[in-house]
View 1: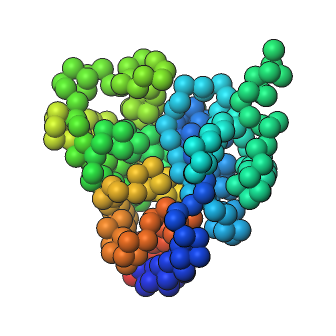
View 2: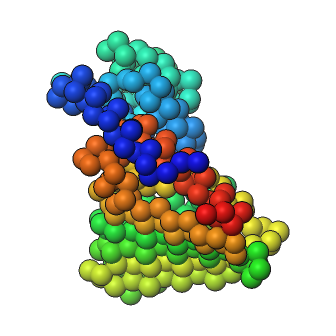
View 3: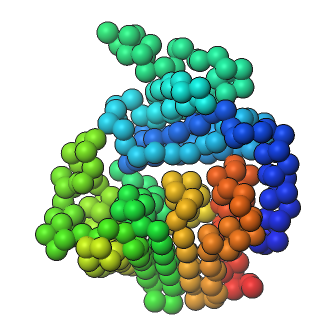
Amino acid sequence: MKSLEDLKKMRELALKKVEMREGGKDYRVVVGMATCGIAAGARPVLNKLVEETAEKDYNCVVTQTGCIGMCVYEPIVEVYGKDGSHTTYVHVDADKAVKILEEHVGKGKVVEEYTVDSVRAREV
Amino acid sequence: MMQDLAMQTLEILMNSVGAKADTVILRIRESEHDNRIDIEVEDNGCGMSPEMVQKVTDPFTTSRKTRKVGLGVAFMKGLTEQCNGSFDIQSTVGVGTTVRASIQKDHIDAPPMGDLGEMIMYVIQADENIDFRFYYTTDNGNFEFLSEAVKQELEGVSLLEPEILLWIKEYINEGIIHAKEGME
């Protein structure tokens, strides 16, 4: 049975991690969670991102946003780097989410085949 | 089409987040005895004019600029009409909005409740600064979740830490099960 007491322990663990990292996280991973995103399957994507980040301790914060106006490309995951870089991944599912974390957040390599530009190029 | 009550309620809660509310209160009552499910979302966001309240159940009304349809409120109202229920919005500009929906629990068209813990995790994730309060009531017991109580325990550590988000989801779902079974 969980209780608010658990949070004390979790707080200490979180603080230790922050100390190790120095100066915040390198990436911000944002999932589109408006009606269009959810309808297209953003929930399992967001859940997977949160679970994987917790388990593998990726250097990112996972958050969400509303509709960004590209509903046909949902589920959309955007990755913002500390250096100002910005990548938009489209038609993401749970497996692709794992790969994005592994390659982009883990190794700093953009997963080109899932980006909006390459998906659009393939459509033409 | 939306699947369960949790996801329909999420849509309403996201409207509160979008309305820049700093306090959002969700009350859910599930009663076998009265055969009702009541859902109430109260916020202190920007509120709506009487004209907007009139129009907001129309799917082609939305204040968003990225697309021209907004379905959350329209779906919720449609669901209550389908399930022998009631739907009501009270709103005052500058004060806030309260949305109330009620359905017949065993109605053939009544969707399942869905994952409330996950849904609340999404709300917290959407804006961790909101003072979010969840009160859940059944015939057998109650459960409450207050984001401020969690923040107090965490003393400055963010609710957005993934371990904390997952803990919130599980804590709420456990609390709901216990409330249903009438355990403390």
